[in-house]
Image (cartoon, rainbow, N blue to C red):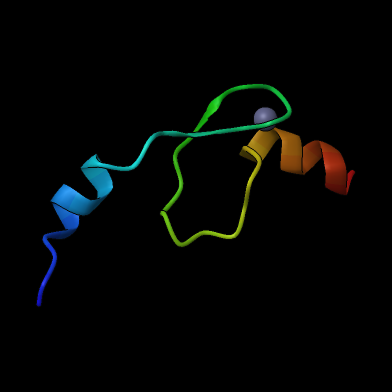
Length: 44
Ligand SMILES: [Zn+2]
């Protein structure tokens, strides 16, 4: 049974960065849990 991917993503809550609270524009299957700016701070 196929699930419409648009319906699937629309039902997901926006992913929020736990460090700064920004909405993360990532794919649902992404393992990243923080936004780009926080990740950049960590790797510095
Ligand atoms: Zn962040």
